[in-house]
Image (cartoon, rainbow, N blue to C red; front, side, top):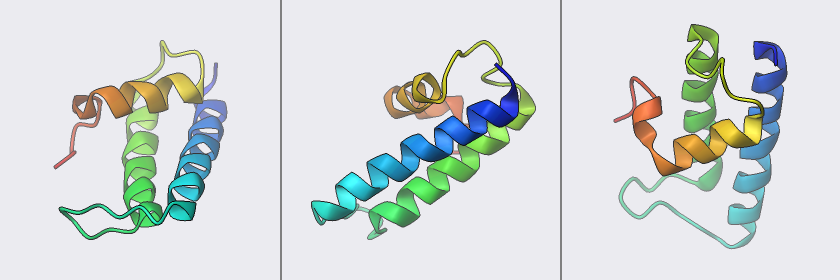
Amino acid sequence: MNRDELISQVKNEYARIASAESQQHFHQTTTELTPEAYYENLLSKAISEIGRGTFDNFKSGEEIVNAIANDKSWLSDWK
């Protein structure tokens, strides 16, 4: 799958997740970020990694989002 398509799918996944969590009034207790800000940060980092080729062997945006959710080390600059 090409990187642009993966980026599009990842954007859609993070938008869906952020929207669902906003409706539940979720807030990151340690950072005080809104769900939108938290997922926007993840999305930005995921897009950077896709551009670097980190996820070239992945088949879908959902697969990338799940990998990042389970292991933030996929993101080289995650703090």
